[in-house]
Structure formats: C-alpha cells, structure tokens
Length: 258
Image 1 (tube, one colour):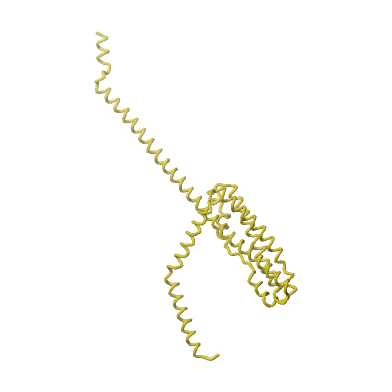
Image 2: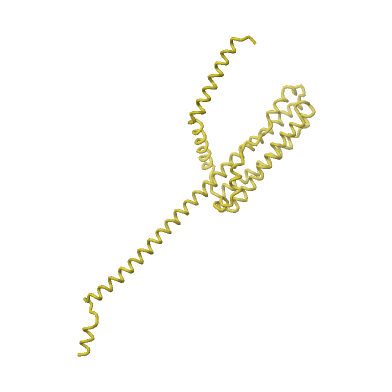
C-alpha cells in the first residue's frame, strides 16, 4: 500500500509536470545559446571589420609614403644627372677656353632645386598613431633614414650649390667657372642617391610593395590631380579670357612701329 502511494506520487513520464520542466530547461538553454551566439557574432564581426579597416588604413599609409619616396628619388636622380652635365660643360670650357662665353650661361641652368614637398614626411613623422598603424619598426627606421638623407640632399646639395653660385658668381669669370666644385657636389649627390635607392628597395621588400603597385598608385594620384585641374570651370574660363586678351594685345601691337 505504501509502495503504491509513493509510485502514485512520483512524476510519471507522461506527467505534465515532467514535460513542463523539460520545456523550461530547453527554453533556457536555447536562450543562453542564442545570446552567446549573438554576442560572439556581434563582437566577432566587429573585430573582423576593425581588422580589415586597419589593414586598409595601413596599406594606404604605406603606399602614400612609398609614393613620396619614389617622387623624391626622381628629383635626386634628376639632380645627379644635372650635376654630371654641369661637369661636362665645365670640362668643355677647360678644353677650349674660347667657348667660355658660349657655354658659361648653360651652367646657370644646371643649378638644382628640391623638386618635392615635405608634407608626407611631416604627417608620417609627427603622428605616433600613424607609426603604430604601420606597425613595423624596421620600415619606420628606414623611412626615417630616407627622409634624413633627403634633407641632406636639400640642404647640402641644392641649397648649398645655389648659395655658392650666388656668392661666387662663377659664370662671370673663367677662373671661377673652372674652380667651382661641381665634382664634389656630384659625388656627394650620387652617394645620397645610392643610399636612398637602397633604403627604398628595403622598404619595398619589408612591406611587400611592388614597382607595379607604386606605378599604379602614382598613375591614380596623377589622374585625380589632372581630373580636378581639368574640371575646374572657373580656372578654364579665366585662362581663356587671358588668352583672348593677349591675342588682342598682339593684334594691337602690329599697328605700332617700335
């Protein structure tokens, strides 16, 4: 009788109470799993998006710096060639001094200028956040060394030659023309060029940037600049007005005997 009473009181498989408890636990577990998966997806997706966003930002900074280095090398290479040509003119005058009056003014056109801006260098060097985004110490060190060499080129080659040329006025005297130290400047400029080319190649290798990618970035930047310039209606209109004014001035000049 006692056993029968206990069995009667114990929940049976078909008892609604058993079914209710199972449904409760299943619902709770489903809710917990749902919340867990939702949190994982939310933070996981955010982390993935943030990762790819940082990678794109990193690549853009790297390409901007490499593009600036590439342009700087073009300027230094041009000066390297220009100084060699100046030495050739100097040599021609030394071989035949009677050509001094003909060739001396050509030297004035071989005074180099720094054909680059320092905007990218300032952006890269002045922001620790930019350096952290790139996240490569060796690349950062090489870029810093490159910019230091570029600064030496600007001050110790371009500005120094210009100052010496202005103060010594070599084209006004045969002796001063032959004494001018184009050779010393040419050697120093070439040493800087070789060092900068080496640093540039190292940066390419470190960041996995090819010549084709730099050229594509260069062409893209050039196209953007050209497009902005060509689509400026105000500038184009003003240019046309100036050309028309000059045309009318030229026509009027023909009526006068000077």
